[in-house]
Each structure stands twice: as structure tokens, then as C-alpha cells.
Image (cartoon, rainbow, N blue to C red; front, side, top):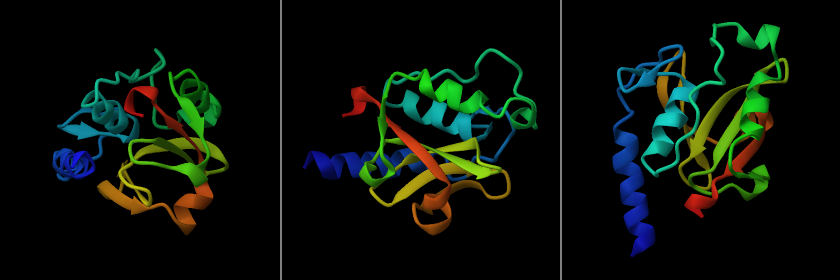
Length: 145
């Protein structure tokens, strides 16, 4: 019964994001970027992630500091998980181009994750081929285990 309740809660929660537009540095339901989405999403579970590292996040931050995102991820209070062991609510992160980690999302089941895209806004994507190849890791928060 609890598993079904959790799935229902997940569907209801994801529905809140379906019409939210992608906005660079967005941190509210008026507009979110990928980091803003995970920060906002996890608050629903009582997990408060930092929405920045204290420095301005310009559009090309990864060109001047390619390790910035992974440094921040490693500071999170979670357990590193293999991409072969993904579960719902794991945070996943990706290198989209040039092997630089610049994207993140949340697993919603064992095969799909939710995220924000500059071109498509809110998306649910399958963790296969394209995404699996670019996935560089995952974090599981002990509060959700």
C-alpha cells in the first residue's frame, strides 16, 4: 500500500512542474533551470539543497570553471550511487558536452528521471542510450531511504 501511495504522490508532485518554463537561474514555479528543479523538488521531501555555491551563475559558467558543479555535488549530504543501482528519488547528474557536468535531474522510477531542459522545459526522460552514456553519477539522500 505504501508503495502505491508513494507512486501516487510522485505523480501528483510531478504534475506541478509540467507547465513550468525553463528559466536560467530560475528557482520558483514561475521558471526553473535544472538545478532549480532539483532544489525545489527535494524541498517537498524536507531536503534543502543549496541553490547556488554563493557565486553568480552566468550562462557560460562551465567554460571558466568546469569542475564547479561536481565540487558542489560532492558537498551534498548523500551517498554516491552507481548508475546501475538507481532508485526513485536519486539525484542524477550528467555531462552534456565536453565531459563537463552541467545537468541534473531526479529519478522518478527505476528507468526514468525528471528534469528541466532549455528547449523543452519540464521533461521526463528514459535513462537509456543518450542519457545513460552521459550520466556521471548519482546521489541517494539517506533521509529518503
